[in-house]
Image (cartoon, rainbow, N blue to C red; front, side):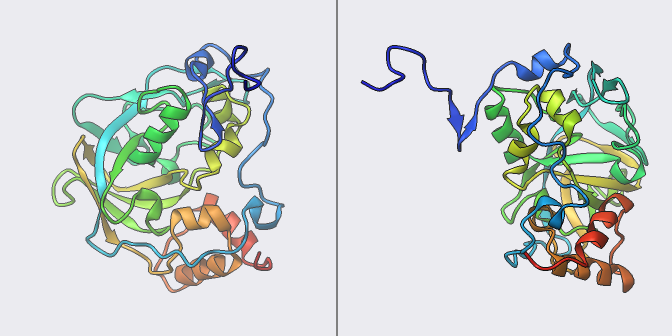
Length: 289
């Protein structure tokens, strides 16, 4: 007889990650001040390679100009503010799907809001997009949560070539009809899982757990305002050509990739957002991992 049979059952796991149920709902009324965090931030300046492994695997982007990245399966905006132990005192991380077309301006979905504008939202982080496969995976880990529960504005079901995490940093995308009222947006960087995120799902291990798959979602700057709707196609309008995808950058912070990004910017092929550039500049002078 096993140690757990007839007594307490071993906790359910997915890929070695403990499954929890109800923590997200519980976090709506709990500011998380009592949560013991296992890590303060996934990628931290001052650490070698910001805590990544420092050596890429030569993973190229599967996308070229005009390629389909995927299609929208959910468009989300804040559903309610939750109390939060961070400096802002509240968090707008909990979002919910919207019905019908959603207007988007330079600061994101018009009906959305961010409580801590110093670290979330703004022109360079107007929209946060996640891969639909990742949303489903984490929903299972969290015992079943709806789209938007992880703070995502856009859920993009991946196409046959790859997903939103596989586009190059600085790529320009179309969402919907770029000749009509669709959007044009630039990929500005990747999510850096933080304590606010951990408190939002009620798990102290969340920074490390969510980072483990290296597909953390991407931030978008809105270049052309418009509307978005479920079913809208997301396509690559232009890509810098430096080969550094979002998931590759998050996973490695390879100094060679940092130099490639800076060179691409210097030649006018890429725009690097300030919140990403400080990590790129730090990595550029480090040894390869």
